[in-house]
Image (cartoon, rainbow, N blue to C red; front, side, top):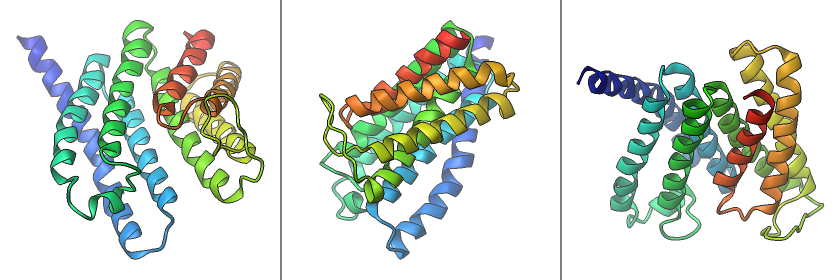
Length: 238
């Protein structure tokens, strides 16, 4: 029984970390969406960055992988039906930049279950919370950079098998560079990892992540890319 209570308290701490980041971010982003002419794809990617960053912070500020993974699952199971209630409202699709009915709910469910899986494998099995946080953050920031650069500036399209034909070399290079910078920053500056260990691991992870994103349909790269990045980090560091 004490173990159950301890886990519940740790999960509450995880929720506190999530809300402490999400609430201020939403309070900033909503006026941006409502009162500016920021492009829809920019706002959508900013929401993605919030989601990935808040989970990376949760991993850094909790003491057990069980609490972090369980919180990710519970968060998804709570938010999913709540979004289903408000989805019929006319402003929903416009505010959240929904591509098709149910897309936001499905993406969120996939996203947070991916978080739970990455945390369980990296931290629960290999004892590497730093790799979990790095893989998640590298994908979130890299994905945003790929869109922010690739959509307005991507003149050289890439059409590998399974791709949706919308990706570009400019976006891919932006993703690679951004993933590398944030991965190195998290592992070296936050976790204190020696640069000679972090640099080759993150460089390889960024390359594999960018390549995986190129050949994965956009609907599924939320899962494939962080898993691929995590696999590389664990090979180098695990």
